[in-house]
Image (cartoon, rainbow, N blue to C red):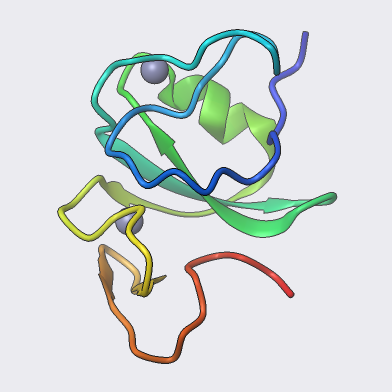
Length: 98
Ligand SMILES: [Zn+2]
Ligand SMILES: [Zn+2]
C-alpha cells in the first residue's frame, strides 16, 4: 500500500510517527529526520520519522523540505526554518495549515 499522511497527532514526542496501518501501533524508534511534505488532504505538514521509515515519509506526499530531527522539532510553538525548527511566538504550529 502506498504510504500516506495520517491524521495530525497532538502528542509531542521525539518518536517516529510511522505506523503500518492507521490502527497499528506507531514505530517506537527515536525520530532522526523531519520531513516537510505538501499533502493534498492535510496541507503542508511536518513528519517525524526514524531513519528506517524516512523513505515512507518521503513517499507519502511531495517533499518540500527536510532536516535532521533537532531538539525543537515536533514541539509546540516552533516553526519550520529551513534546515531546522526554531521557537516561534506567533502561536502557529509548524506546518499545520488552517
Ligand atoms: Zn520508524
Ligand atoms: Zn524540524
